[in-house]
Image (tube, rainbow, N blue to C red; front, side, top):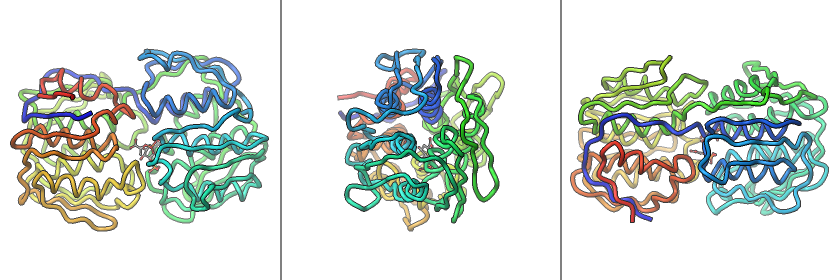
Length: 430
Ligand SMILES: O=C(O)C1=C[C@@H](OP(=O)(O)O)[C@@H](O)[C@H](O)C1
Ligand SMILES: C=C(OP(=O)(O)O)C(=O)O
């Protein structure tokens, strides 16, 4: 499916979708529980459906995720049983990493696979950690990539792993470690990238009554802990998704755009508010009300370290292309390990729209002063974040933009185009 975007303005009030990261964790945490948990306002999307499928494969039950529901109900599996079939994680890295550690608690072997993108992403450090814990974890092609074959039962112990590939390895071991016999201690050999995502995990686990420790150079979780959220868990709004809405407001608000569903949480991507402020946007966050209002403003280029916030890179690259001066996105190497290599994808597609960029292994610089965005036919690379970022660029480009692969927004923000259209953007899907 293609999205045709005309140069247009947005205004009014839009609602942020629920958080993908919290929804994944809530479904799996409820799965590790013994009772029933109602998850209120979950994100129902392709990625969270993959986690729900995995929880069912391990013996849990998930109701309500098939429809666009305000609530899903999870009956936990407690201790995972060996799945009767291959677990398909589709396009979702979070699912594959988190569920790999679940599989290491089961007695038998679990086979995990996914789509072409997921089968090209790195899982090696997590497999090595499970191996060190006396589990069995193999990549069928011996290259650290899926399909994976994983089994246990792992009792717990101490592991050491790099921190600069994916924080999801730490999340996976903390979540599973609480259900192991003796707990898991994780030492980090290199600086942790995407660190706020581990804090999201720790915040959510605390809400499920599971204690974890952040020891500075590593993390620890005691074994034998019970997952229990007291029957109900409420998911906050998603700041990665909010970043596209705020970028639309900063670049194309007619009057003012207000985003609802933006209460504070552990999400590192809420840094988008401070970054837009630093770029010169007129932006106000009413934290108690959970609303952010933004007015179209001239933006200036800034330097942004995306080490903690890799998912913001596509949005920030678009803002940089529309800003005056240079925008440098640094500490970006791990952004290459996502659904696509997002550093190179954004460099190429923004160049196709008339932006001037310099790509390095660890950074992307956008030369706003030499960039005049023109409508073009651009490729969303089968990656939801590239699709959404390019659609926002289309709002301010001169002439019409076609984004190929519009259907991929289903991974994290199924209502993305409907939300933009409701705010007045000129969007047609065909
Ligand atoms: O744990 C999570 O929910 C996520 C962690 C991040 O990945 P890495 O830790 O692999 O950088 C982020 O990019 C991803 O979208 C979601
Ligand atoms: C990288 C992402 O997710 P995941 O790692 O779960 O595929 C994302 O949503 O941008």
